[in-house]
Length: 418
Image 1: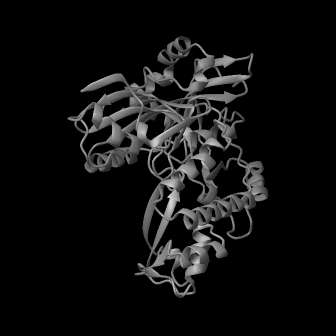
Image 2 (image 1 turned 180 degrees about the horizontal axis):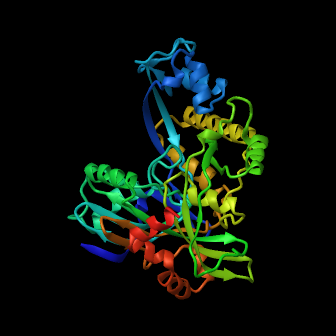
Image 3 (image 1 turned 135 degrees about the vertical axis):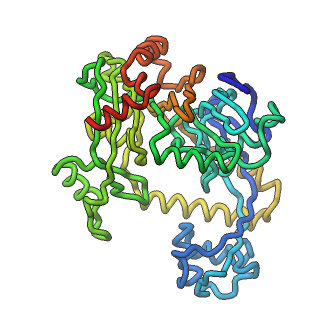
């Protein structure tokens, strides 16, 4: 069994390149063949319409992909781009992929490991699992390839199962199951409130709450723009008016009954008057998406480093179109599988491009309670904490009422019922 140790090394050194003075990690561009079943939302649509809408591809690029057989339908050259998509249709795509960059890291805190669990401190700006934008630049991929090299008897070859959500920009405790059955058991315990978690949050403004008291926010939360992951607390007529003005585009009438019950407990740990910021200990009682962030925004203390919710759809579509055009041009020039294309992609997409490291998000998953065990980050520190005395923050946290509540769930339950 391992307990709170630092694993050091260049994780997957053959797969990445660093830029920005060694702070940003880029996956080396790679080829990928996709074999995709027709999604239900594409059924009954012409192939060209459904594919171009789903994958944000210009129609002239779609024609080029089909003519050069980088895109096939049912493993054959596309002869009818207006073929009506059916449930048993599949399409095959040959692509060169360039993952989005992440923060570089050369050490990883192993909080705990046994036959069922691997608990780590996830670095900030590193996604947990593979998505279309992070096929290799994700923690699960890196762990599966590298961790067994250090401890070959401890990590099985089958998949690791993230037991809970932890956003890309949020750092801290992450529980991974080594067996699928562990994930199922965890989900069951989560639904019955037998799992506890606490976060440290650095927020804007000075919270005018007594540091010796726990306070509760219980505003209902509503997905006001599910496509782009925007959630809002619905707690007053003013909040409803804001949502109507910014998110109700008329496609679907707003129903305030869609707002779901949510409760979060907070306690002030430190007031930074110089920078007009506050550090809070946070414990979500319910498990709504972005719950802590939404509740903090609702009380006027948004998390430091939080992204703006402004979203420019036209800019996003233009970027996607340019990316597809670049891929088609290079695939025609070099051919699928060419080393020359990889080298050209490295130069154009990494060395000759400009990157900016995202600001540190002031949210840190510091503790998790599961099966009467407490898993706590004791070595890893997020970047935003470098401006503060961690020993002072930790002392205040250890002596706070809310910290004690997670060790004794009945206290939190009493607070929940107040």
